[in-house]
Amino acid sequence: MTAANQTPVRIDNKRLAARLERLSQFTEPGKPWERTAFSDLHVSAREWLVEEMRVLGLETEIDAGGNLIGRLQGTSNGLGTLASGSHSDTVPSGGRFDGALGVIAALEVVSALRDAGHRLRHPFEVIDFLAEEPNQYGLSCIGSRAMAGELTPENLEFTAPDGTSLAEGIRRMGGNPDKLNAPLRTKGDIAGFVEIHIEQGRVLEDAAEDIGVVTGIVGITRIAVDIEGRADHSGATPMGLRKDALVAASLMIAAFDVQAHQDYYAPMVATVGKLDVHPNASNVVPGRVSFVLEIRAGQAATLERYHKWADWTIRTMAEERSLVARTRIIGQSEPVAMDTDIQLAISDAASASGYKYRSMPSGAGHDAAHVALIAPAGMIFIPCLDGRSHCPEEFSDSEQIARGVQSLVDTLIALDNRQ
Ligand SMILES: [Zn+2]
Image 1 (cartoon, rainbow, N blue to C red):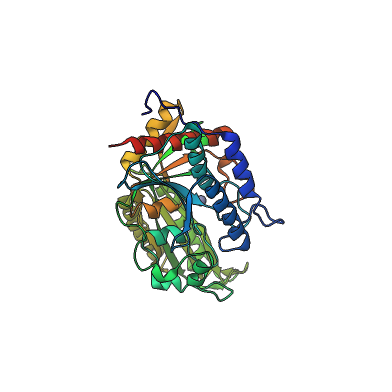
Image 2: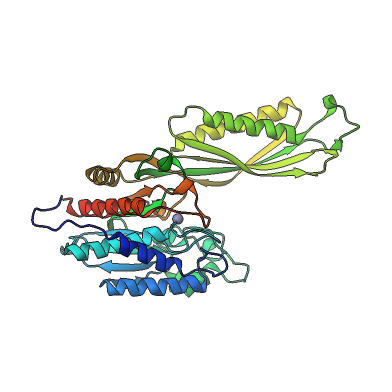
């Protein structure tokens, strides 16, 4: 709620676009837009971000997890921090918006507050989390994991192809791996965190909606499946005598797809994106197939129900064909719910501006999923062209960005005004 005598806080879309453009210029020249974590370009981009933060009057620091933080003091003492941000690293040959938008939007929040002479009661932090994307150390969301105390001593020993450890990588970026044995923030330190991000899918664009209010970040179960049949001569072995592992795998994959289309209580997706055939020769009946079934869902119960069904289906279909199937879980993360008060604040902010919004889960992982372990967290999605992301074609137009960032500012002001 804005008091009658206060100037409304409006974002400046030109300034926002100019900063996004400037950040995108820190790219490998031959392969825009590439600014991978821990690279010299990433370091240079962060030096520019520090300068932008200082010009805005923020106190800057790099915490022990290598997160770059710009802090604005609040007018009241003893309140937790409100925070917003995302990540400035990209995937190889990635886009200009994934991560970058969230960091630049948080800077625009500070600029817009200054323009309007609006002081927040809470301190406010702009956060550029270290290395959200998968990188040479084989771990994503490094900075946000560090903040939540999730980085294990084993994680810190993960080694890049150049022989350096993750601990060394974090130190190079200004962090201190010796201090990562506990969460960097405890509960209550952060009163609310809101991250804005492009959707990276086609749901909002398809429905011609402006804002996605993220309800939670999906949990993921990855199951490695090995089907053992028998490799035989493709000409000399009649159909009735075959133990074809690939035919069985194909029927399973088709069944996974049909089942995932069924009406579940919560949205879920199932994918087989990796499959190896042995011996993989045109004149040999496939004797062995290995594939990975990945399941993502917003509810733990949905993940579990589908996982049990898939295990049963794999076993049954293999037995019917006298094949042997083995399954093992190779990756598992729990779904993380976004804070309901923050979801409400986002939808109120969007509807007050007349923007069309919907509640939706995030199918991709984000820093907010880790922050949610130590603080109330929320996410705003904006549409992106044809759902493209992690590629140079990634694009959101300036109107879509403006609606998202205005909703971000309004959400943060609403959280600031809460008693
Ligand atoms: Zn991202």
